[in-house]
Image (cartoon, rainbow, N blue to C red):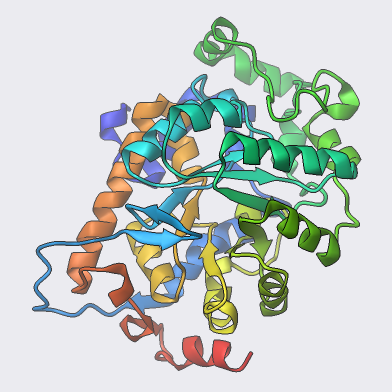
Length: 395
């Protein structure tokens, strides 16, 4: 199977599976506990149908959006994800370049493998910096100041990861940073030698956003140790409100899922929220973000920009989210699989295919602009529109 044979999310996943050692593939692919939420995130989109209009004159389509003050040429952005150079030696460099080519936003994680300064210097498209709340308040302030000095446009605080999810695939393979593999895990690396060759023949793996603060060579400071030892589970709304004031710019909370929390985010001055369950990697059994979208948009959509991620695999999924009021959607695995499979050409092909799907689907829906999408073009399967609309109005 070659890159040119990949035509959708599942094709990229298959190619990544062929090229990555099993422990690394399963780190990308897996979720928490029984992975019920991982599956449910995508199946949620199947519970409602699109209603197309015809004879609308749709020769030209404009899919651009403005979200958190940033103009995007397509309503999809590359969410921040950790450890990208572990999947392919180009890592964030490939993702940032591909996102720039398609005129959209990209995120860099505090567990990223390329510095925010390098990426900001090389690329002009909007950049999000995602970080976690640490026990060391000085570290939090230093990370925010560094991002501001680098010229990052959007600060994104992840709020659903005060402790790590129970990712049993990683426990079975022994996946950690640094590696402490089980015998089965070591065998998987041995039968995929090209990954190892690429890994050792390119620059050393590191975490430049944290290398002054975390010794990733220490057992207690592995990725699991980072979450349990350095992140602060006592984080509360007062802490975040202070960060929002100090940043004094576009500030987004990632991992909000309830109307009540969305209202608090608006009250403390956030300019955006991302409905997310971390791609099913944290609390298994949690609700799909798509299922929460309507009521959250109804509650706060006039006060801040509501986005969502988790489970998006098709252009039609994007249109359904936009129809319920999302300003844009984030994707993670959708670009990580092609990154792992082929580096920057893979990410470009994935974004290009998704963009083509959105454009084609907008034409088939009879709309030429994103703001023409709405709940009038959605129906819950078997129960009409009422269930979607009333859920938010009653909140």
